[in-house]
Amino acid sequence: MKLSLVSIVMTVFAAGSAGLAAQPVQPGAPPQGFVPVQSLPQVEQLPAAPLLIAAYALVWVALILYVWSLWRRMKRVERDLADLQHRVRQS
Image (cartoon, rainbow, N blue to C red):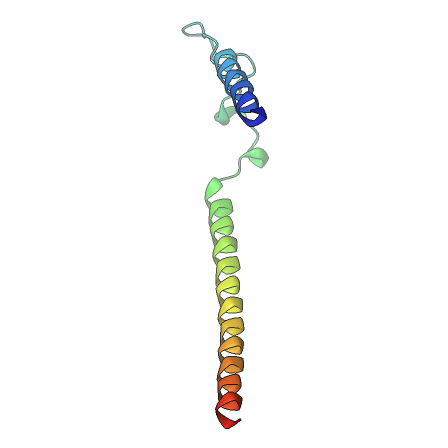
């Protein structure tokens, strides 16, 4: 009951805020607070490609390290199981 009430309130809030964000703009007039990219100083213009590549590289390195960690742990478990099977067969 609480969860459905919270989801209804969140839906109404999200719909209302989306309506406020879409305010009409006069044709030919720039929106308030808009600064064209060409008028920014060169220091503040950063291309997105190096940041995107760095983010993807970081995610791939983390994924590879995680899979390598799982692989090592699985090898250890397999070795322990083989050792246990060997001890059970001997006794």
